[in-house]
Length: 162
Image (tube, rainbow, N blue to C red; front, side):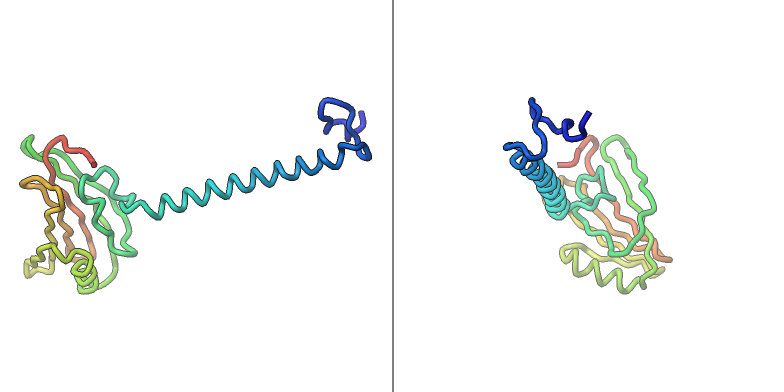
């Protein structure tokens, strides 16, 4: 079998035939369409990722996902559960090697409405009542000694991410 016969379009189209150049052009355009479609998909995914304001490391949060994670902080893990049946809490833990003063300064700028408290032992806590929160709901950013960073939220039991 002649290798050119693999490219037939329902007939015996071969190089040199009248439709051969048209066929080659259609194959080329088909490949270009595939490349363009792939580029569009990648572009759309990039735009969607850029528009998503929640840090993916804070998945499952109700409010905490809107809190910025300190740049360069390494994700360590999460802990969460119910307390007294009426409330749920969850914490996300990170580690940073930056000086505490830099981390506090960052959150002062990023969370201007948060209340900042310090305990004298080197621990700083930013407490914020998020927009739309019910009574008793809050988010905290806690900087522990040694560069441990905790983002904590307390919400009503059963409340889901909006």
